Image (cartoon, rainbow, N blue to C red; front, side, top):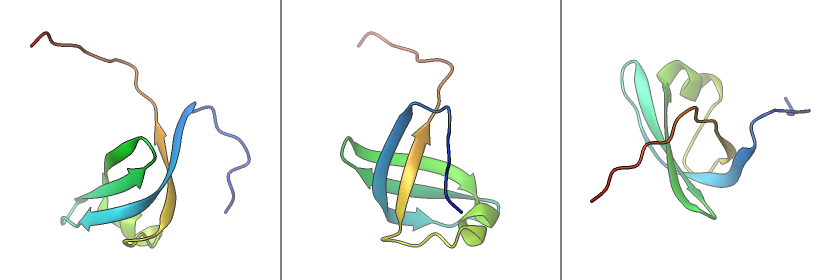
Length: 71
């Protein structure tokens, strides 16, 4: 399956560095040019997409809110 068009502007190509499988959701760490991006997705999606360490992926980031705290 190829992506023809998508409206998400923040796209970062990378490779999966680590997958922490859970019974329902899993943590997928992607090493990108901007650094490490972590996604929490369903374990079913990890299996359906056949995601493995080393797989090249596209991290799509769409946020509706960004919060800032003064330290």
